[in-house]
Image (cartoon, rainbow, N blue to C red; front, side, top):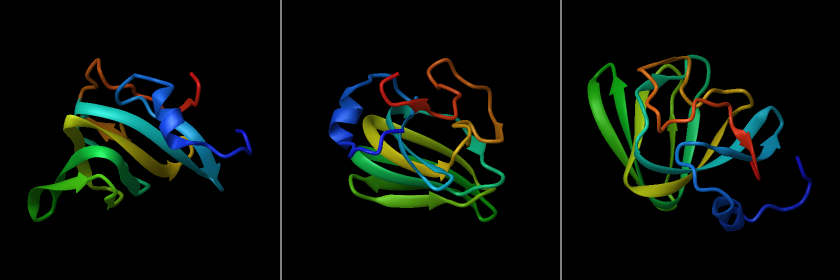
Length: 131
């Protein structure tokens, strides 16, 4: 990890892959990741950690399966949302989006429990910026 400032626009322009986050920096034991997203991810659960989303561009929808039923949150540019640990969720971006994620280093993008992983989803713990 570099100790230099990271311009998020430049970082986002450095890759095209969807649902394949890049680690832009670390804060203590947490990764700050950026990703380009489009279409649907998959239903998954992070059993031991919350998942923080910040929409940098576009609009992100997150389907949630909660004890009271299913609902969808819509996050326009500039909105933040945290999915609580243990909550089954499915991010999707009908028209595409750029997002920033904040989660513990080593957290898999597909959670601890998940549906079958589609080909367009990169099951990773994040890639170094520039790869």
